[in-house]
Image 1 (tube, rainbow, N blue to C red):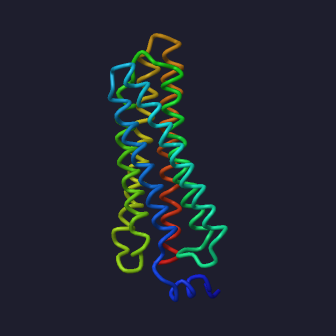
Image 2 (image 1 turned 30 degrees about the horizontal axis):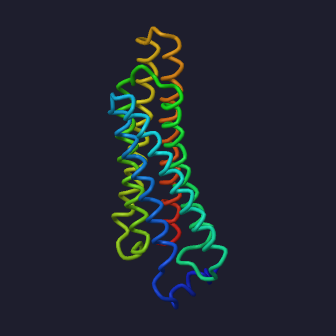
Image 3 (image 1 turned 90 degrees about the vertical axis):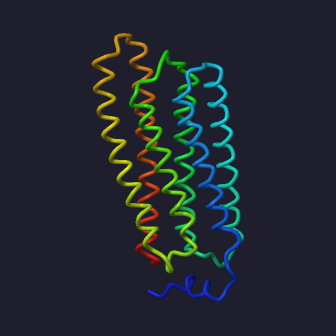
Length: 217
């Protein structure tokens, strides 16, 4: 099947809308993940609350960028990638930001007495995975010229997600073995599960990026 959108895009100037907006959205995702890592490394209650609010602001920023992307899709005839692909990347990245915010809001709501060691490790893996996803988004405008880096990014996202799964399983096992306070156990279990969901959402973003590689490279 002839991809008329791809042919027409060759006749148009370099994209100044969608790829910059996707890069901006990916940047918000990384910023949120950095704040998440700081949150789980923090021991000061007031600072934790502040970081949770900062993450919420990043979620709001991400939502604004996503709406701009959708508006441009509705108003633009020729796009650098198929509309469905642009929308899919935007949706998956926004979901990552949303789940990071869900983690933060649960921390704010539950105010756990402490964090388990696996949580800090998982936030580090999540931050690394968001950086890989951002790197892949930044490679979209040169996908045909240099596909090696792009492939490396989505493969690394998968590796980090598998590592996060292992940390999650070990963390849950340790939690039920070591936590003696039933209330704290419930709080920590819920937060760990939300962290694991975040890692899965980043992996879903990686899968979308991989499908785009297969389609366009």
